[in-house]
Image (tube, rainbow, N blue to C red):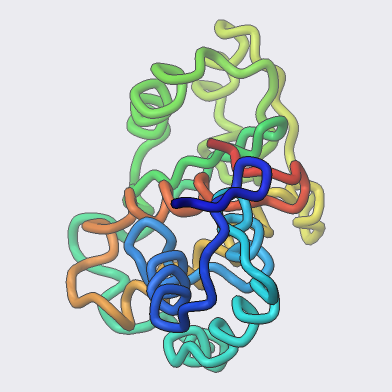
Length: 214
């Protein structure tokens, strides 16, 4: 027999079973070491037991990978390599759905435009507005002309005031922590698992929308 609380499965008082659920929700390549708040909200959508929030907080506080990420102030080894040396972060301001696009720092504006069309426009259509930093490629005549043709309004963050594009700034910090976690656990190059990081990010609870983007 199975016991339910509304639509959530009630997990019996079995330490090994609860531990297995906590490990899967935290260590899986589809979750990538979320913080205790995200992990709690993700788990409670499907499972319930008395003290679940406390157990999640305790589990995360004991995670050695998470501790290493918090005290690490430099990029962990293996994050940069020959194929790509940068990540272009694109965040949907309404749904918070996010794309992490592996690129190279020396990509031309036309190469960035091609990537944007293939990875963003193909899936979501042309945006009504774009908020970005003042990278010369984004202020170029080519980029402005392309966005004008799409009917997209361009807005730029103010120099030395990155909070104008605060959504991306917060996402970058989360992305950095997730990549560090992956680099500490896996030996492959970061762009081999960036798609898993993107999935885990979009599949986890976000405080601003009180749900996961997916």
